[in-house]
Length: 471
Length: 105
Image 1 (tube, chains in turn brown, orange):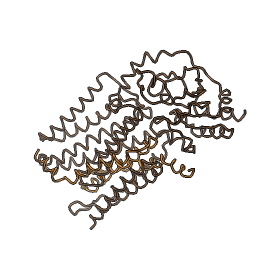
Image 2: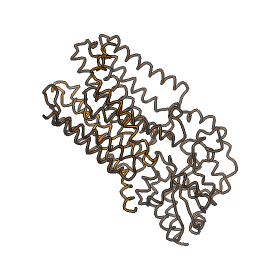
Image 3: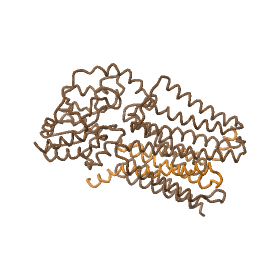
Image 4: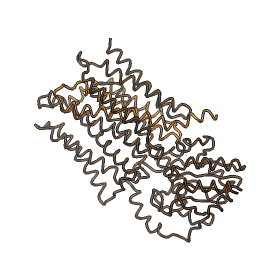
């Protein structure tokens, strides 16, 4: 009876996962979808704790289980609540790594069980061993990779590229494969040594896999690792014949893979292009082209900016990562309200990959209560730039770089950009002339229509607001 | 080889689930607007936290003298919970904006 109730719990949970994902892909239902999936997860967890039994034996160690859940809940909630809007992407990466590590740990414990139960002879347990290994390898790669991605996004780890890196990666992968084949096919007398060797090399592979990939591509990598962890979770489903782990895991594995591809498409790049890291290679080629800084940049003063903007009839704001870093979204909204009060039409042009993740800017501006209908997608904004008086670029760089259209040698060539040059004036706020995340120069800054307004986005916006009020 | 074939035959139900879920996963998020890429990834991230169930089973089965299983199981439960709870909470925070949108629209 109790087992049937558990089966029913798992069924409900599986359905909520599917429904949740479906609702998450529609703006109107996204929030509810997340809650639906969370409710399903809670049902599955509580059901497992109290109803699960194996060969008539219920689970024990309740103290440990509840202790672990309590610690995990507190840490997880605090981390998720405290994290700044700008740091959310790396938080997701961190959580993903935790899931991967969890899967790897399960594999380690189950391997020891298996060795113990089989009394050294693993040949009768090949399929189980295969799944344990799969969970171990994928989980470890996902854990190590996510940690590196996390470090890269918060700037603790720099891109490290060295010659022969891809060969090394392929080599590591081959070693993992060879060891796995050895442990399964030849069932050596002392499998533990090889098992832990596979564990160590998988961690190493995860590190080297993400290391050379440019920081701007991290969202794609996190999404990919996310789907890896899904598959690792599904391995647990095989292991325990647990349908909810299987459904949840495979669902995320499949959806995550598609999402990864969609993200690549938004940047007009292919997945292999991201993974093989042509960014790293193209970087050097772009070097000489990047150094030829044509002409000089034109600076504009705060008071001039204030005048130009206050007497414009239509202003477009292009937010980028710099806005997020400076936490300037509230100041930005204030400027928008002030200008609107003066009869200026203000809108935001959102590039699909502005910031560190697709949707990053929407989240950020929504936090400052910017009305959703003010945010224009790229295609729409591009149509309207021609009738715009001033485009104010706040900490965006690569997404407005004309090289994406004109310079085939550029690493971002082919990426759709915001055609801000169609507007009458372009004012660029940046902290310095440093290139953006793709590491390339931006010709836009040297164009005659462009003026530069240097400084921290928040400080500049606050001063600008004060100036406009004084007009 | 034989044992693998037998295993497939014995577990065909599970294998069917896998194949169907792959299609469901792809179908379900097929038309997601790019605005929702990040929250969707974050939500999916929370869902694969279902691996916590495995951790609970490992923990609950561990014999009281098997310290390796106890310690690793405990660690796995903590990490899995962080994945689940943190994942859902952070996704909810990301999605707060859509609540406001309704008020305006």
